[in-house]
Length: 301
Image 1 (cartoon, helix red, strand yellow):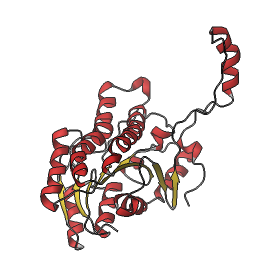
Image 2: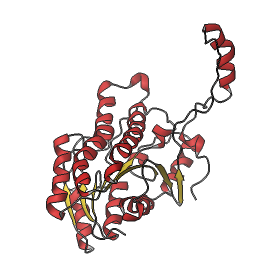
Image 3: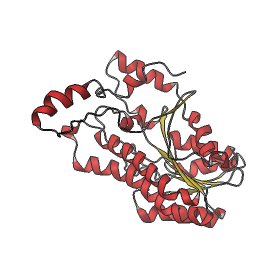
């Protein structure tokens, strides 16, 4: 499906990113494997993660190069794009997968922890996409694939920084899809369900949490590859501005925010009519204060 294509995959030294890099290479793509070799919270730890994945790809007969720049650095993002074009002659798709976690309840969250997560996830997606945009425009085509999360789309406890970044990525993707459609550049999001370093960080302090983690272990990151490969390929050229989820063998299309109910008074509203008319009329359509697990209560299939 990806013969002749060139893909950049960030955060590809392990977990979902590694699975996507191996899957893209197996489908015929040349891959730029980006990973700074960081801990889950973002501190540099090893320079060898990206190269190890490259070695695995080349040993299987594929083509790949390693990059250790940070997605949070605009110059680093530009170097990734330049490396793809100078090495392989073009760039067809970018997967914005790199991420870190610094979880904590909102009333305890520091500015540094909020800022760091936003910079890697949201600024990182912007930096890579912005650096790729001129290449895609000149080629009259390209695919941006952004990893979002149900933590942003639906909500989760103790993840205000991560949730804000991931929902921001959804809006960024939609704007890119609108602005770049004239050059046949598409932009889509995937909210993955898979066992990785990030989900391995979930605290297990109850039988319910233990059961949830056991279910997550069943969802392999390799399950993401077919959808990513499709969106990067010519077969996915007419798919843009969408939000998908992959949960083991299930693929979901997520709806986007639209008005669901309205009320009107010809004479306008005041404090009393809002309290006694508008809110009672709208209350039945309020969205519950739920979390991701409430929306996906069944076992992975």
